[in-house]
Image (cartoon, rainbow, N blue to C red; front, side, top):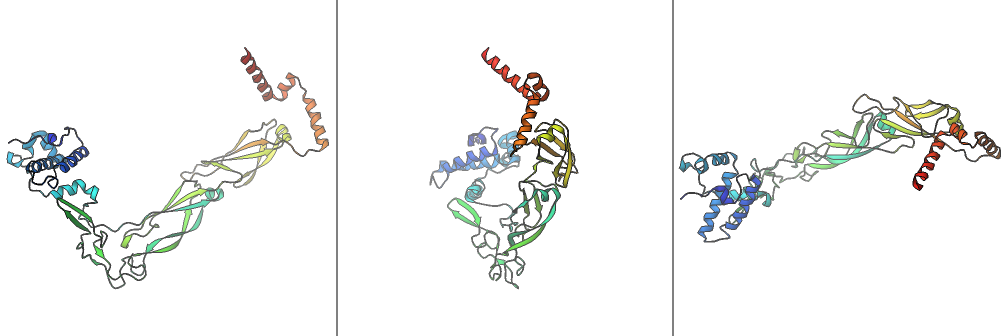
Length: 382
């Protein structure tokens, strides 16, 4: 009797992915499962047929042979020396592969769980702008788990050692069978390690690790900024039972500054100037992170004008490039004027005149603004 096409058996197309094949097999295997159909020879036959199709189509080499030569490519009885028809295979084995992710089943490589590497840690470090720009060495205190120095991380009392687990015989896993299912799980006694500590260390109580606050020196490179991370290899939590430790990541955060705002490698600041200084020009003192410098203000400077001081910014942490300091001058309106000062300002205002020609000469921006307002209303009414 000729066999049915494997793709037809699983009701999938010839271009079906492995995931689609596995999904189809799960559905049919549960439908024809012998425990669900006791004494039903037809269901048992269908189950074996589905299982055979699944095993062929999820094996890349066998699938390639089947796609090229059909059943002759995988059936030794037809001369291809490939895969045997498979009615005698253990149902539990195939279901362990298919449903392992559901039942927490088998693991590759013999099953015994390796001791886990220590966890990575994060430490939030807040710096002033000056510290971030210039760099420094900072001491930090980090609470963590370190290897027990009494038992050298083994968890066993000094002079003793861990012994083979009697529940799983060192395999790290136990197998549970229920009818047709065979499910492997981590051993409940040794938790997958394959060994148990019968005489635990008095200091770490068999854990191999103890809590401790470490003091570390962290070198902060010049130019770091908020969001930068510094990795200290091996300074995280100690691993289980002598496994390698994790890493410590120092997360940098820079506090807001009272004068400067940082944008990448550039610094910005606002510098107040008087009305007379803006009109007549002169020199003003400007703060930088290295001290004060003199900035020349040309006459007739308008408020909001930006001046660039090259090389007075921040040195990049990733290159030798240095940013600039950009100073925005803001003209201050004088306050708390005396009567004499007010009188002088009125006299000055009168000297400017009020006609359009004078306005254009002394206040070009004002003239442009009012011309724009006039045109706006003309367009609105037209």
